[in-house]
Image (tube, rainbow, N blue to C red; front, side, top):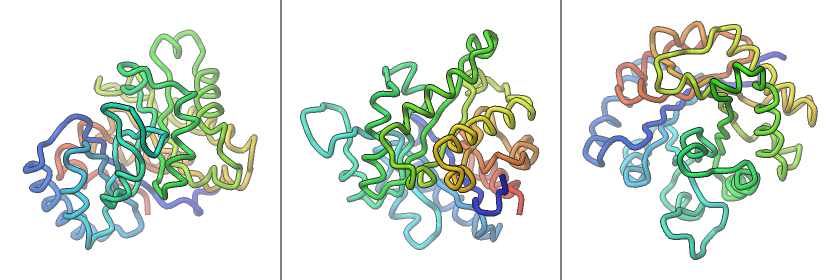
Length: 257
């Protein structure tokens, strides 16, 4: 399907890194580098810890840089100690939220059933959901990649109207490539992301042509250009390499024009 309808999207996920002071310094550095690039054709986001969201929103207010949270609860309020609700994020001026990252699934028991509630809740609040999907090394070795992706995509988007499917960004992250230095082979990345797009097409061919699917998993400046050039890859969800403003800006620069 043609990528002309899909603006490239590059998001940096800081995970549990950077203090408020570090975030301020980084924001100034990154914004200067993005301005020098002049890549207004690429949407850029930083997925920051809750404690730095207000700092990043304030620093990026006069720019196109999007600020994204790393998680949220599906309820607007309630007795959910340690959780954060969508209205709390929108009050800060946050633009979106990462949902279902493999680390949330692995370490904190995030389920597809919970994500089926979180995705529409984020959209209803005016937040851009970035839904993460991906298989483990054992699942890939067993030939279960398609089954796992089908489960995660179908269940995660189950309660979403077909008209809103393209309003979600999907990030395919092979779990065995996250933080390991391993990157999926180009054909593996293209095959998996094309399959994700086909799953969306099962519900709406129009949405499949417009939905953006990112690749994540040890993306860095040295491999970004070849990954972002794949026909079904619309951008990247960048982990460790996003902690350095120079490296992250180089990844943004690698997006095809």
